[in-house]
Image (cartoon, rainbow, N blue to C red):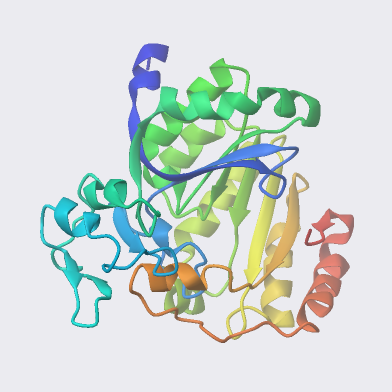
Length: 314
């Protein structure tokens, strides 16, 4: 693939977040790609799950129909409904995330569209704005999602072009992609953040919608074929799913043979709850919290097995 072809390649991006220090070494810019093969019960980025653009409504920003009706006039499909009490409702059966006419018409950003087609060149133009920070901190760009490698052609083009521009690269992946995609990405990655959620395939499938067979096999191949590539295996600790000593011990034992792999556990949080409401979905874990006593106990188990290869939550 030529550099010109890579720069023109387009994909669906729903956010570009600058100045992150949690998603790879140094200061990083995170490029979030739409689409995920899993449907994790605890997902904090519900806007990332579907491949197509999605319209969201934040009622706290809406000026109300008594002051503004621009979205009604802008919607081409009649999907914006004015209710009897003057509130706004989106008819999801009619809305197809069309080229965000209603969102562009909204003066208060009460309506937003998650997902915009952008080229590699356009994305890296934003990433390069912080090039000075990457140099000083040994940071770079991280592809995230959703599952960024689901948009394989676009993600690989982004990684190749970033490396041509001497930008360090990383990916946050759930590993549920064909091995040929993971293998191709590995050639252009400086760092990998890889989710290992549970070792029991049936439990994994019940909570994420897919078995972990491909995920674990891809991880084994990645760690064995690229022994010099730094990999951070991460486990989101979810109440009632993997917050037991047995679950964490099984993951740590799986990671033990790979010296290039570090391990980090991330405590469950509810930061994405509001976005479910914006998308007219019910938050599956609304009201659920992680007991404060859980993380120290699980970290102790992981350290007992992996020693100083365990990273503590930031």
